[in-house]
Length: 173
Length: 132
Image 1 (cartoon, rainbow over the protein chains, first blue to last red):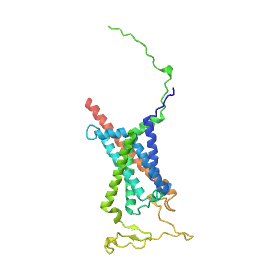
Image 2: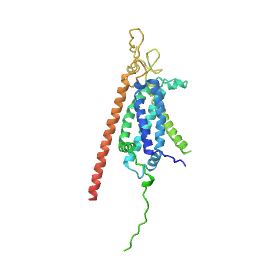
Image 3: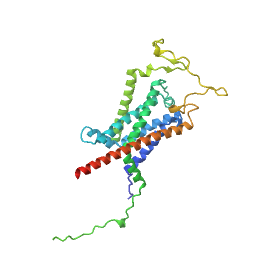
Image 4: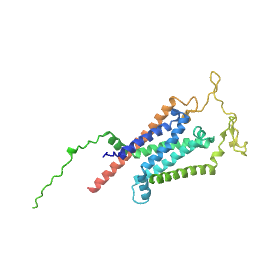
């Protein structure tokens, strides 16, 4: 029978977060990628955002249930920051789509040429950068522990090294 | 099945945020009231607006983009955050922007982590003093 290897959730989350971090840096620098690639990367970033939230769904659901009851202030702050980040990222993506040149054209639509969407896109990007930094900062300890875990090899337990159960007589005195 | 239910909730939340943005832009009239550039390079006003009002004075001709030595027109687009659209945006600016964003992220992260460590150390000390 083949042994099924289950991925470590901490390592899986860390790798996903590293991917998102790189995504943030790349999509926040349109002059690096060029406009059309910036638009597609931004749209794909929305998908990774959904995956990130699905991976942490249990935490989100638990804090939502206990927000006004028994929970720590740290969890509450994290939750509110996460909600603000969610709104900010959706604002960036939505305003970006509204003024996009490549993505909308692909679907046969014409972009709005209004200044409003450009301003909203730029302002929400600035706010999001600071919120992202705060979000990472509040998870700094978790990140450090996860990185340590990633680079620390867990010693394999050999069958011969397993502890044997030896019956011991305890004298009743 | 459970994952579909979760995705549906997320899509609903995304829809609510997008709907809220559209609603705000429509009720405040922000998307229409700001002059937009026409294809002729002239600043355009909202239809019916008083063009003689101080705030609504026509902007006149916008500065024309410089021309190259070969006579072709260069574009202003592509500077700063919106770089990459024109001839100026691509290249060196990209990495500077990445480094600037990385710097902001790392500095704020380090600051928050430091403050977090100080708070937990103070809490631990208070706890240990209380038990003594």
